[in-house]
Length: 292
Ligand code: GUN
Image 1 (cartoon, rainbow, N blue to C red):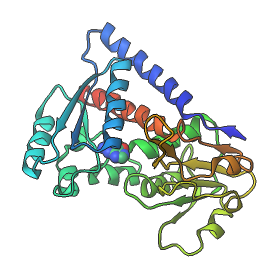
Image 2 (spheres, rainbow, N blue to C red):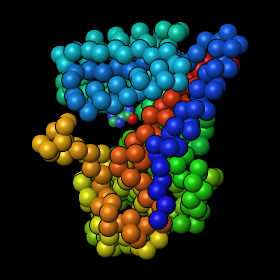
Image 3 (cartoon, protein in one colour):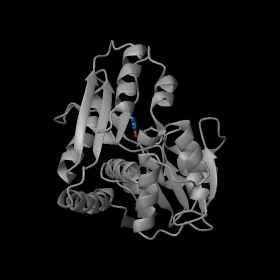
Image 4 (cartoon, protein in one colour):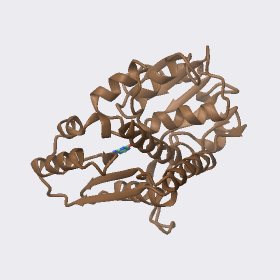
């Protein structure tokens, strides 16, 4: 078994981006500027946004955190979005999800200017991704593709089974794996909560991508010998013996499944760190495109 080490690869990518930024600075060019909008006090979202802002600092990007109270209205959030759209200093920004229930997420994501939508959530960017046009590919599926490419995992002609049909992970990764090109050319089965007998499908899979959010869902008897396992799950499981009061658990029963897998991502340290690296990559692309 080989570990798909997202921590290591994400550090390589961040070093590559940092070198680009150093070149920009040396030439007297403006460095990329990422803004993140966070509404409310969701613990996981605070952690993720904090990591994104820290990563910007580490590689030499400018960053801005717009932290808004839970009671922020939809109109107020739209004002912030419009201000970021118009601010020439901001190359790209994200609105961290989930948003409080009183705000229509779709309305907000539609208001983000596609040229600054480094999350790739706007329908124009999702559509371009599906058509293999130049766009911003969402960080999580982008990170999975990059991990497969950098480890030279063969995907062409393989059967990939994706678990979960979310707009952020399951749906886009199923499209990307099926496309022509590196880490593509797979035959994809997209499974979800209404799929009958998921285990009979995962047992046939050369590659399993699990983006379900159920701790230890994928057991050893559900996977084929030699399968490639990508675990996108990051569930917080309460545990009072831990300093933080919880631990992070993936969708995959790692200990048992890793005995059968040819490649497997750990949780934490697999897909998670890759998403941050790819968000930075998209922000660098945004800067370059704004300059062009
Ligand atoms: N919530 C969970 N994942 C993401 C992500 O990739 N981007 C944003 N904006 N919110 C998220």
